Length: 320
Ligand code: UDP
Ligand code: MG
Image 1: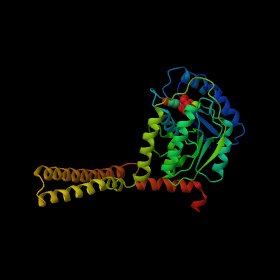
Image 2: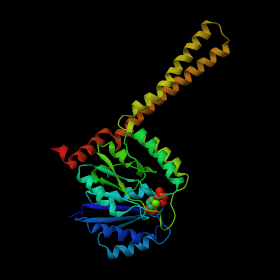
Image 3: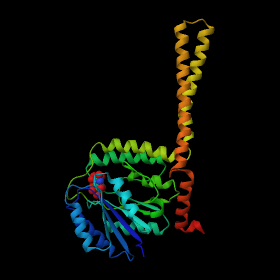
Image 4: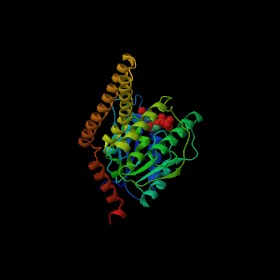
């Protein structure tokens, strides 16, 4: 029998925290009342993290370890965990003891209420202002652009119905967008306040450059959410301003010829009209290409509707 719950933790150079993390999850697990597994994903650590995972594995039969040869990032580590998870419900959390496994039952209560994705909200966040402030700004923009209203997208402590998250493709820093991507499958999403502790060991694995990665991911995720099922529409929208420009330059060119303006002006307007038309035509052609690519990939509308049907089936109430 597969366990009901899979707890997935990405770890990059967290040798001082791993043992305490597993102890904490086991302690909290005593009150779960169902089977669970712990999946520790070593994201290419260069310290002793993997050796400690192996030692813990020999003592805990419900513990799985996954090792990357190279540091691929937190999102990729989480996705690898999803692929190896056998639980119906998946909980993700950080491995540096900043999230508290005692909060897992709070998330699961919401899942029992019928939600498909439950996000932790670190009301009393224990990070330096230089981290909290950019995070607040990112939260504002993610909320504004994705239409999924949460206070704290960056909190790793989240619970998912496995069907809602397993089929999603994610890369870069996209783990904070899992709820937004999940919303494409019709997932019901909510949040619960959770505890947060200061980092006790090691250092944060992120620097200032995270801001730019998150910004580019906001853009990418918005494109995916808005245009993945019909990218042609997106490309046509981009092409419209170029078509308008082409018409304006064309009209100016005709005026220049009829009004006997200088031949240099007429030529300039003609070349501009031709270039704008070419840009518009290229964009529409790219749209057709994107439409073909999307239909051949997992992002196609049929794929998404399959995922959402499965999600609804598992959610229970709607299936009846
Ligand atoms: N992490 C990872 N790969 C990375 C960066 C981070 O697996 O490339 C893990 C890290 O070990 C921790 C979690 O992701 O378990 C969150 O990272 P961190 O605590 O450094 O982020 P912060 O709390 O500073 O946002
Ligand atoms: Mg941390």
